[in-house]
Structure formats: structure tokens, C-alpha cells
Length: 131
Picture 1: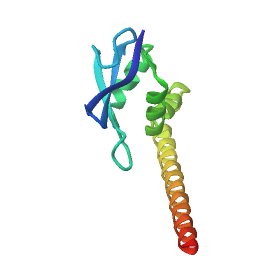
Picture 2 (picture 1 turned 90 degrees about the vertical axis):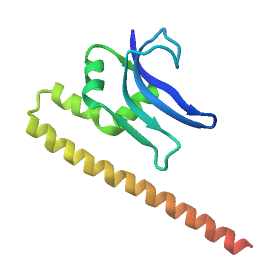
Picture 3 (picture 1 turned 120 degrees about the horizontal axis):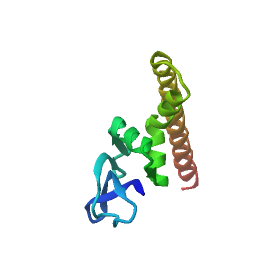
């Protein structure tokens, strides 16, 4: 069975991953069929680049993404877009809904960032009041 999974690259303590389509029996960093993207968890914020058409191709022919890769693909909106197309929406409807999804996703990420910043400031203020 073909799996879409992460292949580790980079150096010690500085991981960098290639998102690859590989036979499920092959070792993690072994033989693969195709590189379909990259994931850099050390960048702030982490970066994910995927070739949407190739990932969609592999998913359509039955490749199974690992849990982590599934999360990364979902974050790019590819699974949502594929689902809309599968349900029979026209290209213009898909584009409009993807634009709305992208806007909503941006707002959600900004909200999480703001909450994190507020928690950090509250913690700093509490430490300042104690000391």
C-alpha cells in the first residue's frame, strides 16, 4: 500500500522533512516513489509546502496519509477542496468557498496567536508583581 508520509532530512537537532509517497513496507528514510512537499517544524511559524496536484493524485489512487501528514494537508485546505469537488460543486463555487475557508482559517490563526500573546504578557506581569 502506498503511504504519504514524512521522510526526515536535515541534521542533528535540526529536523527538516520531505513529504513523500512511498511503499508502506519501505523504511522511513528509504526508497520512495515521489517527493510531494516539504515540512520545516523548526521555522517560526512552521512551514509546509505541498504540490497540491500531486498529493491529490496520490490520494485519488488510494494512497493513505499518515496522521501527521493528514494534519499538514488539512491545514493547507487541500482535503476541503477535494471534498467540495467530489460533492459536485462547480469550479467557481469551489473557488468561492475556498476563499471563505482561507479567510476563516487566517482569522482563527490570528485569534490563537493573540491569545498566546495575552497569556505570555499575563505571565510576565505576574512574575513582575511577585519579584
